[in-house]
Every structure is written in C-alpha cells, then in structure tokens.
Length: 325
Image (cartoon, rainbow, N blue to C red; front, side, top):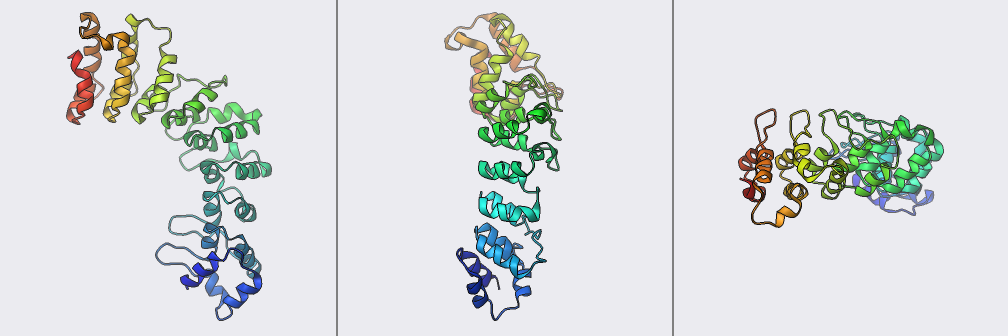
C-alpha cells in the first residue's frame, strides 16, 4: 500500500481523473487510513511533505470527514510537514484544519511569507503561542537568528512589545538570552534598542548574558557584551569586578567557559582582562597574583577553573593558564 501512496505523492500535478484511475481497484478508506508501521506516515502526511497540494485537495474532496490531525511516530501532522518545508501554498490550504498549532515551526523555519499569512489571520499569535516549556515565537526567532521575522512580529504587536521581549521560558531565558546563546550578535544589538531590554538580566540559575555566551561558546556576543558590562572599569578594577560576577553556583563566566570546554572564550577572557600585558613576557607581580586568584577561585562545589580544565584534560586551556601559575 505504501508504494502506491509514494507513487501518488510524487505526482504533484495529479488530477482528480488521474487519481480515480490509479485508485480504481482500491478501497479509498483503506488507502486514506493506511499508516506505515515503521514511521507512521500516511497519504496526507506524505503529500504534505512532498508539497503535493493537488493531492491534498483531491483527498479532502473524496472524504469530507478526513482527519487532518493524524500524526506520524515523530508527532508531526501535515501542517507541521508543510511549515517545515516552507511550502506556502500547502500551509494556506491546511491552516483551516489546524489553525495555530504549527505557528512555532513556521517561525523556526524562517519563511517570512508564511509568517505574514499567519499574522494576517491573528497577530495575537505572537503573544498567545507558547511551547510546553514556555518558549514563545520571539524566543524561537531570536534563537534561530531570523532578524526580519523578529522585526515583523514586533511591528505587528507594538502594543505588546514589553510583554513579548521580557517573556521567560521554563529556564528563565528571555528572547535576548536566546540570541546570546546562539551567537546572533546582530539580534542582540537590535534588541538593545528597546527600553525594556536589560542586558544585565539573569536567568533562573542567575546566569548573566556573559555566563550564557561563555558556556555556549558564543564568541562574537561575548566580546560585545563584555565591553558593555565592564566599559566603565579601569584596568585595576577589571579582574576584581569580573571575579564577583557569579551565578547560582558561584561560577564566574570563566568557570562556565572552562566547564564546557570553550577554549576560544577562555582565550578571549584572558585577552580582555590582560590587555597589552598578554604580549609581555614578564607580568607585573600584582597583576599575576590577581589572575592566579581568579583561575583558582572556587565555585560552590569547590571547583576552580584550573581544576575543571585539569580534570577534563583541556590542554589548550591549561596552556592559557600557565603564565599565571
């Protein structure tokens, strides 16, 4: 049966007469209700995945009570498949069956025409749509770096901008933090234009944007955010102020970077804290002692950045630390 479904689905220009000819020896209910035991695929799911709008329309005409909400073993229905493939025409056809449950997928995939269509039906989707872990379309847009879609959904919801931009997911992450984690510095810069955005905000584990960019290895964002955090600090205060920037587990961004093996972030932190001293063979003893203290500063579990690098055998990071030991 699935071979027949496959064949029908590939005929994107199929007509009603052709469909009737090809299925004349079949029970249509059996054809429509058949599901592949391996992956749960059926006729409408395969048609949606292949962008076969003609077949979807014919099947709908054949069975007015067709259940379009059927899903495969991955939990995807036909609208999920169409949105994931950015198939605008199929989405328009299927949206009356599914309404809003695929809006987040459309946002994730970044097809602006599909997003415009959804918002033309109901712009409040941006505010009302939430995933099971509290993520909003704005979270998803920022995580995937869709700047134009971000601008669009904010433009369509000017009266709710503060609510949209300060929404938190189950981890306490805001849309800004999602952009930080994914290293989308263009989106970070754009969001900072809004008064409700606080670059010094923390998640539920008290991670700052520096912690989040350090642990995810978001080099460009870390570089940009570091300069905002410490732009007023003199060199003499910089290490001390950096050392007191801690999360719930008393970890600095340096420890967050080392724990996750982000050697490029560790190198950047040293460059930021050392400045021109990085190129000097002989370090000032006072400065060297401060860096030594930072590298050996303990978190709430008694682990220093040096301990973490040593236990995980991060040789590149250990090499960065040598000049301060």
